[in-house]
View 1 (cartoon, helix red, strand yellow):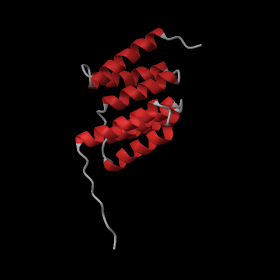
View 2: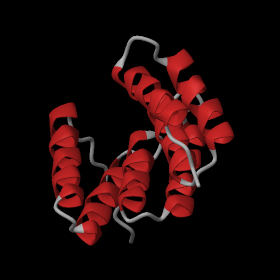
View 3: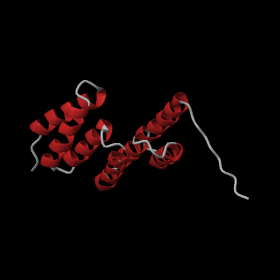
View 4: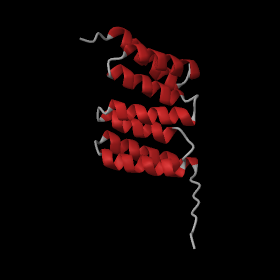
Amino acid sequence: MTTKWTVAPSREELAFLVEAGVIYREAGNFQAAFDVFNGVKSLCPTYDFPEVFLGTVEFQQRNFDAAEVHYRKAIELNPRSAFAYAHLGEAFLFRKDKENARVHLKTALSLDPLGDFGKLARRLLEMADRVRFL
């Protein structure tokens, strides 16, 4: 006999888990951050935000290709994810691909012109305009 578990965490519980993952990531404990964000992904398999957070862990380790994979999975789950598009644009920018960075950052900005992810995209677009790659 197989037991099927169902867990429906509240928004507060999810926020707590995400915050724990962010703290681990910022402290450089990348494995713990991966574990937490993968746990959140297991709890919310149809949501885009766990994939974005997994991508940010890869990004902080300078694994831009792996980060891109997570951001694209997030976009598959939610094609209107300004959160994912802003971070995807950032990954392209750090890979010195301004053209693709601008495309994704402008998409994020159009999806969230007044919100936090639009603001992030705007700042990254400004940075792209100022940065010169050798």
